[in-house]
Image (cartoon, rainbow, N blue to C red):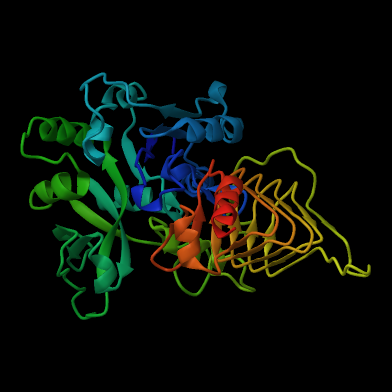
Length: 419
C-alpha cells in the first residue's frame, strides 16, 4: 500500500448534531465513551495497512486536530515514510471555503501530488463501521477501473439520503442518481437499493484530471456524487465494490450518526449484552487516544443506614470515573465522570468530566463535556420543563445539554420563579 494516499474528508459542520457540534467538528464528537467518530476511519486505515493519510479539516477543527496529534501520531513513523497530516483550508487555489467534497480535494491537489501516489482513496470521516480498504484497492486494480465506489445495500427509504447506483452483471456502474426521491432498486431485489458509501478509489492521475476539469465548470456544485461520478460513468471504467464488513456479525454494520437520535441509538446499542458493533474484537482493533487516568471506581455498598449504593448495570464506564453512591443503568459514562450519592442515571450518555449532583435523576439524556448538574435536578422526566430550561430536545425525546451550559443557574432561576 506504499503507492496509495488516503484522504479523509473531516470538515463537515454536522449541523444536525447540534449542540454536540457547537464547539467541535462532527468527526470529533465522542462515541462509545472513549472513542471519537473519526477513530473508525483511522482504525480502518491502520488495520488495512494504509499509512499515508491526509485529514482535510474545515469547521471547528481544534479538538479534532488535538485528538489526532495526541492520539494518532504515535502510530506513524516519519522516518519510514509514514504520516498522518491534518490539513486545514489553505486557500492555495481559492479564497472560499470548500464548496463540495470534490472541491475540498481539488484545493489540496498540491499537497497530494507531492507524494506522487498511484492511487488515491477518499473517505468520509464521520461514519461508524469496520472495513478492510486493502480488499477494495485490490479489487480496483484487478478490475482495471478508473474509479471504484464502495457500495452498501439499503432500503429504498434509506436510499433517499444516498447516491444510488445501477450496475451490470460485472459490477460496472451504468447509472447513478444522487439523493433521488424515488431511488431505483436492485434488479430482482425490490427491497434494496445499492447506495454509495462515499468511499472512493481513484487512479491518481485520472482523479487530478477530473478535479481540474470540474473546477472550471461554473454550473457545478463541485461534489463527487452530484457532479464527478455522473459525468464519467458513460465514458470511464467505474465499478462498485460491495461492502465487506469486518465487524464479524450476522448483519453488516454501517451507521451514519448524523442526527441526535441516530447518534443516541448507536451508542445505546453498545450496552446491550450482544451489541451489533463489537468494540472488543482483537482481530480488528479500534484505536484512540487513551487519557492517563486511574481505573473506574465504585464506592458504597448500600449497607449503611442511608442505603447508598454505587453500581452500574448494563453500562460502559470509562477510566477515571467514580460512581460514588449513585446508580447507573444502560448508560455510557465517559472518562472522569462523577455520579454522586443517591443519583439515578438511566439510558443516558455522559461525556468526559460530567458531574451529577446528589439526589439527581437523569433519563434519556446526552450531557456534554464538563457539565455540572446541581443536586436534586431531574432531567428527561418533564420534556416541556427541559425545553424551557433551554435544553435541546431531539425528535425522539432525547434531552441534550450542551458543553458550557450553566445548568445550575438555569435550575436556580426556575426555582426562584416557582417561589
